[in-house]
Length: 201
Image (cartoon, rainbow, N blue to C red; front, side, top):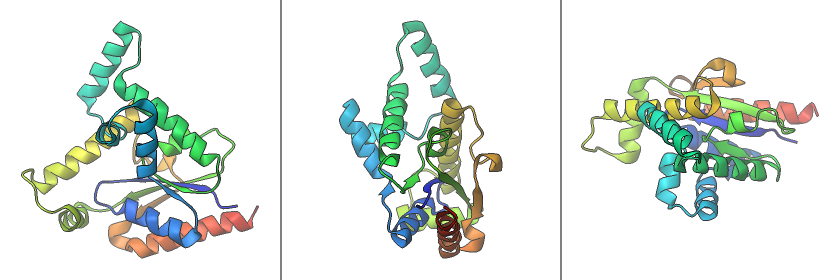
């Protein structure tokens, strides 16, 4: 049986596209927007709120949320989203091998009965800038600032909910530079490892 493959990624590195291709190649489900939809349905928040607050947080938001939750003795809205997403991810993982993009899935599935293959996708700024502009186009915010804000938000969110460092190689089984290797080489590496893990069962 293939492992559950979790993919964490820098903004603009192509992690989602790589995850899609891996899922297609291995003929297993990809879970990304599905997690957002199920979480929004269960918690009663809008899809936009879950999509944003379920993966990004600023250091000031983290401090403010924890202070308010502590004083009022109840979880913040962002904590509720994380807890609900956690249950959704665990329920999806229980169904069998799949690819899960982002949302601290590597941490959530740690110390569970599930075999995982945790991947981190990164690339240099020039590659990511070009890819974001091609995929999303220009905006009022300079591209460098967009990259920095997204990565900073993901890093703060990951640290807040896992007490780990986002992107630290110790937290992942495979770290891949998609700008240097190309997306399809990354897909080949991930699928090759997954197949080898399956054959060793």
